[in-house]
Image 1 (cartoon, protein in one colour):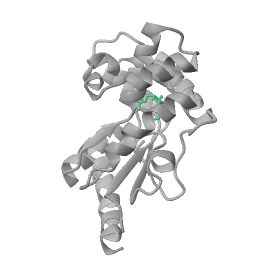
Image 2: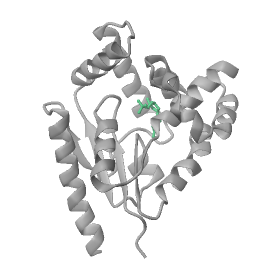
Image 3: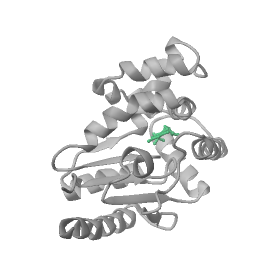
Image 4: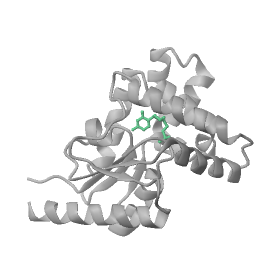
Length: 215
Ligand code: DC
């Protein structure tokens, strides 16, 4: 029996995957989970209660996490992104967050999850997989504009350094490193507007949906 229609949207920081996931949610009428928020919440909680390098402290923060905590606007800051990337290296944190993500993905009508390891680890059976990328320079500029709009005073160079550090950490960790699943469709948004990127993603998913329906 075929499972629900899950769309996995992976890719590095500020590649456009969050906006693409939201637009796909509207186009296909599916709920969206931004899995980065889980790691951001664990990062912020672990910093409050102890040491980010202590896997057990971080894993207990992950174990107590509730869906309500994900609405906190403080999770959208630059600092929360950095804390998230640090706690995300701990295998215990990742395993504590696995069930929440799989439960979300198992909704009857389907679901969209965006993150780093959705197509490879969380939902390897997803019928639609996208890996969204853009050059570090383009991503840094996009993230810098977002941060400016949120009122965070930071230079473009600092944001580029953040992006490079997070790419290296997220892609270099041993457990569930960020990488495209072998069956993911790569979407490089460097030269695209958000409208073009969302359109391209929708077409890729429509093709995957037709294959899934026919299967
Ligand atoms: O998508 P984001 O920038 O909000 O993610 C923040 C960090 O969380 C990211 O740098 C690595 C981690 N993360 C992860 O390891 N796996 C995921 N599925 C999502 C995020």
